[in-house]
Length: 66
Image (cartoon, rainbow, N blue to C red; front, top):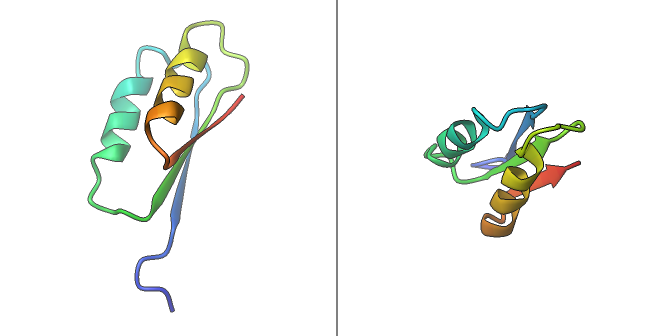
């Protein structure tokens, strides 16, 4: 059994520009190291896509799906 298995957190992100930064920062601040954060943008009409892309370029544990 793995001591610290990988945990995947999937976050739906439709028009989330007002809340996305706070949500992602909260997930990044957790003590659990073996995590991946998958941000799923389903055609947002605000700046959600740009925010996701910015996080993806800065953090290896974050994946964006558009």
